Amino acid sequence: VGPNLRLEFCSLPRWCRIFDHNDDRQYIFYLFWQLAAYFRARRLVRSERFDLVHHLVYVSTWQPTLMAFLGLPFVFGPLGEHALMPRRLASRYGWKFVLRETLERSVKVCLKLYSPLQRLTYRRASQVVAISEIVKSSYPRWIQAKTIVQPAIAGFPDAPAPRTPDGCFRVLFAGRFVGRKAPDLALRAFLRFANGKRCVSFIMIGGGPLQGRLEEIRDAHNAGAAVEIIGWSGRARTRELMESCDVFLFPTFEGAGMVAMEAMSLAKPVVCTAFGGPGEFVPDSAGIHVPVTDAADIVE
Image 1 (tube, rainbow, N blue to C red):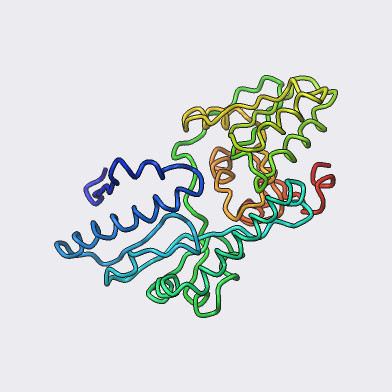
Image 2 (cartoon, rainbow, N blue to C red):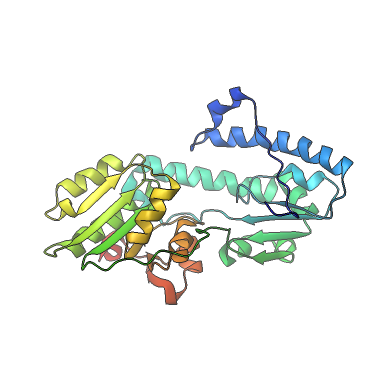
């Protein structure tokens, strides 16, 4: 830590850990943390001089922050959201997935635009930061007028280690195994590509409700032996696997997809859908954008 930087950590009581999970419980955990962080920040503001408050997490357009009420010039973001996944693709994951996607999107749009606390948060912001032009365009004009576009921070800090060529071609996917990230499309595309080829491999890092389906697809294909589905890895192991791959394959339909930026930070080309976050911030010079049509065409 340099001389001009001081870190203040704000932790929650042990009992709050029951909400600290990567599912809907995280929103309850975040609410408690927001309250604790606000009172910690308010004590600091009363005892020291500050010029600006900048709220960075959770990268969500619909969740307010109490940091807007500290009486300081306030920067909010970077903020993002998921666009509604195309129905013809979402329906592949069942009616429950479609219903959940539709309800979640409707609730979040209402909270973003009509919640009194969220509107007041935006009113008090001196600057709003959106992760993409798509997110910025979703705001009413009075918010757009003070919004800039800057993708959320992501990436590995050090220069990538050079990969030793060995004649093999390696593909990597990293992310939750859920419909919005379309890991099954990535797997089917690789299997179609790998059929009849030697020394090709595909590693899928992640976990989630689609893992069983992915294993079934892999085991039923002639080229399935070239696919390795592994659980969540630590950051060091993920970086190691990312450095050793030739292509990062990520056909996501999410609004952020910052793992694609981590791949680019290691000089890896990204193959993604022309949709959402990666569809906008992966430049043509750094990857390939696959048009969003139907599932068969995307795989092809």
